[in-house]
Amino acid sequence: QRSAAIYQLLLVQFLDKPVERAVYRRVMDMDFERDLDEPLEAVSLRSWLFASFAAFVLIAGPIAFLLFFGRQLTAKEQWEWWKVAMIAIAIIVLVVEPLRILFLNFILPKVLIPKIKHYSDPA
Image (cartoon, rainbow, N blue to C red; front, side, top):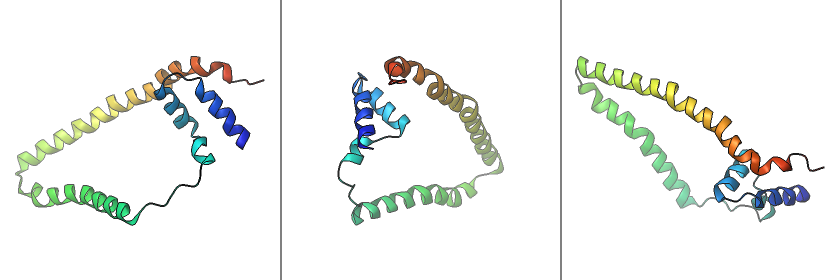
């Protein structure tokens, strides 16, 4: 495993930009630098409590808003909210997701493949 880690680190060194290196490590799902270092430390109790509180506020906040303020809306205002929500979902499904798929599956490999093409067959 150590030799595989060294080989992967050598491959990454030939990528010029830090973004290319980060994408390569993320796509390959290999973080050999961390594996060769000491184990990660546990999360402190203070950090865990802060993250839990932030998650609770971010989840409970919109729920409380809809429960206390959303029911004060008239039927026409509720219909407008529904239309805006449907338009947002349509934009996400029809525009954002296809662009994300296009970028991750076509544009990004076209940029990275020339950089790492000669490493596909180490023999």
